[in-house]
Length: 423
Image (cartoon, rainbow, N blue to C red):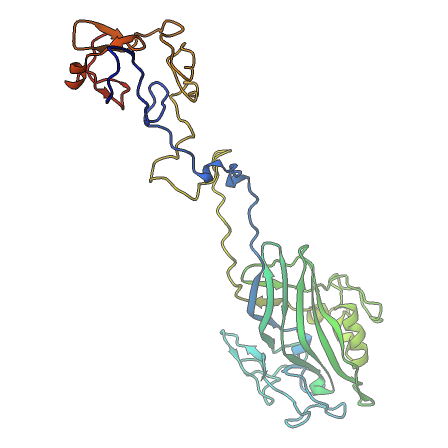
């Protein structure tokens, strides 16, 4: 309210206003943008490369393998060829095993390794020294028949990446392969499986044994070494396991001097493995030396099972419209979009710092006695309480009693007199 009276005639000045300056027709006033709203927008998630799950750890991998039919077949001397859990001791001579020699000797289980014989009706039986040359159903094997014994290495550990097709697994344990009842035998320890992304792989182990001959003329420990038990091609690594037949057909080691290629399925075990068997006296049992022995000597499929630890779920890549900024860390009320810096009606130009009526020039620091140009819309007028009406900006003779009666009271929020006559 105007509280001081001047002379009878003075210039009326609009009171100072603390309300926000608005563009015509804009309400409510714009809120200042939050700091997060000023960030540069991130690209939409659909434009980001998906995360690749990391390799999964395995701690329970089991490897099951018969090696070959020949390794479990009946023999012309010593009863049969057989598998035994653990690394056998030195028997001291090329002779069939007994229940007490070598020591350690025959075992169906040792540490992480076990031996089982399948039954015709399903299930398996656990062999003993006395039944090692019998099938799971109790039939004694003879040359040309097999117990189909299966050795299993448990608790293998490593990593598997099914998406990449790779695997690296190692086992702690050993087994022994005896021919002719034990006249010649060798052992393998701590096998390791490695599979590359191109599907190739290898199963290696540290082998040891004794130089022997079937006639019993020699016996000496061999130097342990690492060899390939199998080389692999087209390995399919899945999230639960691997089943693969080792390479055989067409493999031709230089040391396989009696290799027979008559059979269309001729082949051999890996070259370094055959080199080692040349020292044990078993070499010709690991490649085709006759016209029809491929089925007996070729490697049987290797089966590996495991439980892969579940990989972290990759971040969803739900597509969004290109250019849509990432949500801010200071959300507004649910459902209410963050206001723009200075909202305006569509097509309305951004307001100036001190808006004026369209076509009206920006006011000077102190108002003049009249507008420099005639306004396009009539300016508000003020009644002095009499019959005379004045326009804002004119010199107005004010009456003290009119002001005291409330006629000149100004509404500070509307910036116009509370009582005004029509223009």
